[in-house]
Length: 192
Image 1 (cartoon, one colour):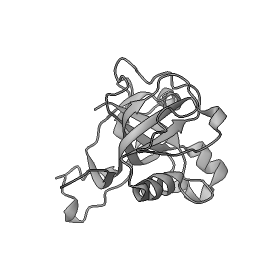
Image 2 (cartoon, rainbow, N blue to C red; image 1 turned 180 degrees about the vertical axis):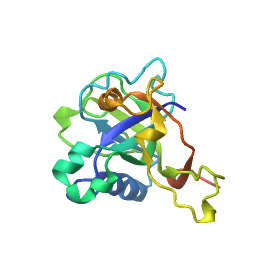
Image 3 (cartoon, helix red, strand yellow; image 1 turned 120 degrees about the vertical axis):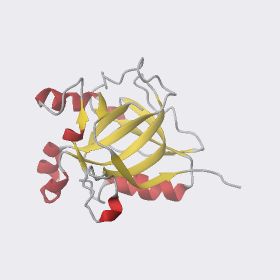
């Protein structure tokens, strides 16, 4: 499945907006989907041919070092790492306000200023991920499963470089190189 990065930070006043709004509030809502915006520049590398809206892809939440240094230096240990991912099932590829996914079955997360929204993502799954033990993929052996880093991904055939760092700001396609362990997953399923 195609993978993209969503640069973010764990620096909001009430704590990490990801764990607050997605882990806690979305789960408590009992709604099958959640939606949140992309606020930076228009995501020029979100490839509508490679990943047309309606074809799922993974969006990895990458913690920006610059923002952490400036806004919450006590969390610098999380900089340039990936702790979570969301499965995007739909997105709008034009700049739209209000959120086109604001529907009765979608939990809408509004972060930042609504005027800054470039596109909206609609997701159906949220996962906490770690690197798998490369020796035997057996995490029960007591091996520590660390957070993913940029070195665990490649962009256009290249592992992290300055050009790759710039690509992070454009919702660029990446390929995961390392096996992962899903530590926790949240999704909505009706079972009889």
